[in-house]
Each structure stands twice: as structure tokens, then as C-alpha cells.
Amino acid sequence: MLVQNIACGVSKVEPSRGMTSGFKTGGRTKGTPNKATAEIKALAQKYTEASMKELGRIALEGTSETARVAAIKEIFDRGYGRAIQSISSDQDNPQKIEISWKSG
Image (cartoon, rainbow, N blue to C red; front, side, top):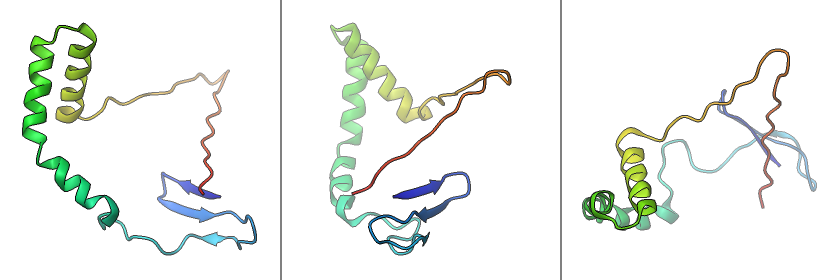
């Protein structure tokens, strides 16, 4: 199982199925594009302008309120970034947040 400390940017592999513990090695270095998705990304980017125009049209002229709201949200997400989702608790009743995943 891969455990990541996001704040420190450190990945560590926990022992499982015969693996020895230690820091993760190998893989792409930071900033190296993923070759498997680079072609798809390049194709999708060709449609960016037309897609934004269509989102704008739907936001202004769509017959469904749900479609208009979704289009507006997509435009805002691309223009300003996604909104930050905050999690809060108080000192008397702290919240425990646990994130884990199993790769493979």
C-alpha cells in the first residue's frame, strides 16, 4: 500500500505481499508529462475555444436550468479554479479525517 504525506510531498511504501518497507522509487519525475494521456490531452485542447463558446451558449440560452447551472459552474471552475472545500471542527469535538486507498 502506498502512503503519501501530501504536505511534505513524501511517498512511502508500506510492506505488503513480500515488499520491503522504504521510500518509493522509480516512476516519472515531477513535471514529466504522462505519455499515455499526452495524445488525448492534445486532441482535447484543440476543442477548448469551441467548447467554452458552447458552455457560454448553454449558460445563457439553455432550456434546462440544471444545464445552465452546470455550464456556469464549469466556466467558473476553468476561469477561477475550483472552490476550496473547507472542513472545520471545534476543539471540544475534533474531527478525525482518514484517507486511504489501495493500489493495484
